[in-house]
Length: 490
Ligand SMILES: Cc1cc2nc3c(=O)[nH]c(=O)nc-3n(C[C@H](O)[C@H](O)[C@H](O)COP(=O)(O)OP(=O)(O)OC[C@H]3O[C@@H](n4cnc5c(N)ncnc54)[C@H](O)[C@@H]3O)c2cc1C
Image (tube, rainbow, N blue to C red):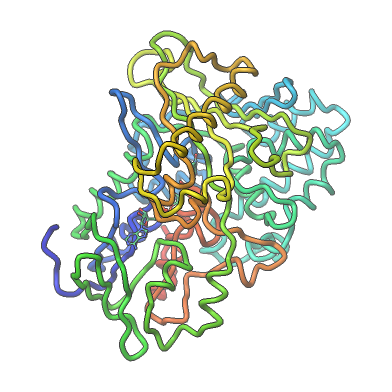
């Protein structure tokens, strides 16, 4: 472990995207920052790994809004991430939704998007215009958290209190079109009774603006941020699991690590699950039992089962779009227990040549399917678990193959991950893919702010505000502004 300075201005728990970005912002502002990460490398959900010479990603497939002037470009430019090897997805079909074997392509540009889908749904032309108009307005206002509010109706707060499903039902009368418009939303937890309009509109809007993959994988984001932080004088320590936050006279004074070391600071930011954060405060005069109960009662989003496939050379053309396949009547209803009826297919940019080398198949996987193995260690979960994963992988490959996207004959090797893997690698409770469930019916309880009852402890990351690369990046600015008391923006 590198030498540890006596006392930092800010200690950050967790080197996921949120922790690294907060570290970057504060180090750049002159704070002496130390980031503590329990894993052997930074990145959290952004880790990539190699098997048999091939590169695989975990929690990164594509991002939206990276064209100059678009929201993520503005944020990533600040973080020095625009130098990475970004590749634009097909503007005339960055996403493809396949519903009952019919294919629908998503075009970039709000007008083009509406126009293209109007060709399949001519009777919904005006509704599509209304749909994209709302998405555009919400997308235009994404950075409003840092600026004075202009339209009360479209503030983040008001959109968090509105139902995504109600908006869709009111705006679009054709149920098939509703399915199509929601069809790329495996990147959020579609739930009629909880998903806030803000999340649905903001995420979909950003991809309609422009959609991008990253050659080299999500790891390159984490490495670039880590290197920049270190160059600016900040500290990132891996294999440093925080097991307790020590409070004295109403303030946190130290983070205690698994090995026994203690790292002192004036202020602390937690990039980990809020309930886990609060559990680190074992003796706190600030945290009342009711607050602990509220945090531990927060529901978690569904986890993901991923089959990462290494393809035989020259078998499949690389596809510059994502595919979302459904065999169900209503994409907003969860799958029947144990049945695979939906999948996302994400092709990785080949490292050599034009033909595809790796492809990921993803499908939601409820915690209850793997819960019986929780508490076991990776590689030691037993034969039954290995058999379960192989069977599940076969089913998912079979589902995708039946739609002609892949053939088992194309496959060289397969690696799988379940919510248990996520729980192990990122300490995300129940292996939740997108943090806690935000609920439009209960925004006061489920839409958390960076502040906690402890005045010098702040939260960041995907459990607040909006998940995903864009959401976490916005939240990092909000957290740092709250911590410093000054509005930090470009
Ligand atoms: C399968 C999947 C696919 C995804 N695909 C996309 C995509 O294509 N596009 C997109 O925009 N978003 C995607 N996301 C979402 C995106 O990856 C996340 O929203 C984002 O990376 C979360 O960052 P975070 O910093 O909030 O949390 P995390 O990445 O979970 O980081 C938390 C960090 O804290 C560390 N930690 C935990 N406990 C401790 C402790 N006690 N002490 C020290 N360290 C600790 C963890 O090890 C971890 O490194 C995907 C997510 C998943 C799961």
